[in-house]
Length: 113
Image (cartoon, rainbow, N blue to C red):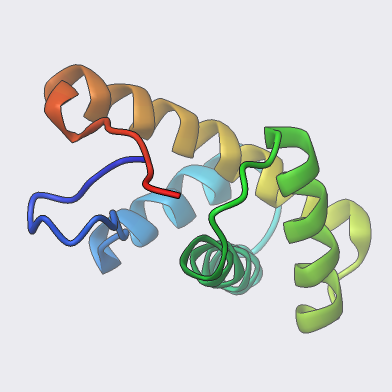
């Protein structure tokens, strides 16, 4: 789990980081910024909620599938749209994670269960 610098054990995304993700995905896909923002915000919201409610570990693909299904139901967007947007956002998050870990390896810790 990534630990925040505030020491509260959570690493949440700032509005600026969310906007960067929206920009990245909008530039990488053919979808309107509003659609991309709705899907990303809905998916990240559920992902954040899930992270705070459970200590279970999920494989990346299973977690992506769950978040896709949740986002499809919440936004009413077609499945191919949601999958493409969240897959693209997932690649962006993977890159962000790698950057953060490289810059702050001390933030990488184990989750207490």
